[in-house]
Length: 500
Image (cartoon, rainbow, N blue to C red):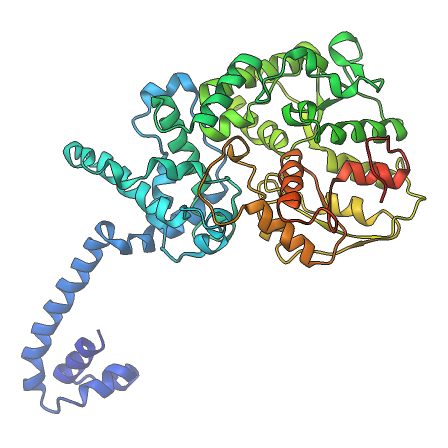
């Protein structure tokens, strides 16, 4: 460009040549205008052809991300796009245009690989490689190059999609907002639909969800066993529909370790004289597991079951134990309901229990008189923190307890490490790894010098509890749920809880 400009100035010798300061100095290389003119014409055409050819080639080469990146960034705040199961036949591709644009926007910088908990634990999964493989597969299909596609089926390794925990750490650091977790879920939905390459244990879990409406293979009668020693109102047997509905969740209601989370929350609510109830034995699965692993048909069935119950019993205010239930109600249900007519939508407010505890403390309904002299670190659950930006509420609860010293881990808040239980990983075993994600996390917690690591998710609670045992930290580090900590600080613990 500078040489073309310099040659033009050398050939024309305008009075204002020195204004183009770079071109002016280049023009001095040709003192004779007659020598510069033929070179200028040749170089101008060469420059024009190369420039236009370069622009025309951008959509067909790696440089297309220069154009796709701004579009991907612009579309990052678009509402969650969902496709009902009955509309699948009309959908030619598994991915939306927003997904395909984000694939093209990938700059291959590798930041996602550096932050990915799966890659960090030595598992054969890297978000960047997955996106590039998926992009190649989509390109082959969109190009209708069926014969080449059939020979390239191994471009995308089927087992790769089951390593992702959908923790969203990759999206947090991606400069162009490539939504890898959404793409993983979309690929899973197609794999599950075809019934191939689904891990055996995950298949068994889906069968349990179909048969028992929970992944723990428990009958409906056991759903409310956690509350046998408590007086909790069953909202399906009362006319008082204005009460807060505590949606316990499958894992919290049925796993023996996580049940203490629910019992602790019930004691806190009773102490605060805040009336609430549950759906008792009629409480279904919210559909989170089915949605994460791509079984969208089952998810929609479970979603409709939940919405029907909420509508039938007048449930308008919900609090959840699990960040996964919270996320599903707040985001997935909202997106699917937006496709319905207004008179068919079921409206309700949903909060995570950490938000309710924080509100009770601020309102003065929960007051701490007992000093708890201990050093505590907090683990941010992915679906509470990164997915829904709830970082402060749990910390406000912890710091409200007199005597507690809160110390942060090296990775905290939006930079928190995943425990390895999300995205259906809780229900899988035998995945290749050098070290478990949960073991990395408890080692980081132990490095802070904290005596207790507190979390606000039943899946995180179970994963970190197991990791504490496998890493030999049983004597030096305790794992607690936020509810358990509050109950201890209030002196409400039962015989099942150990004091600090």
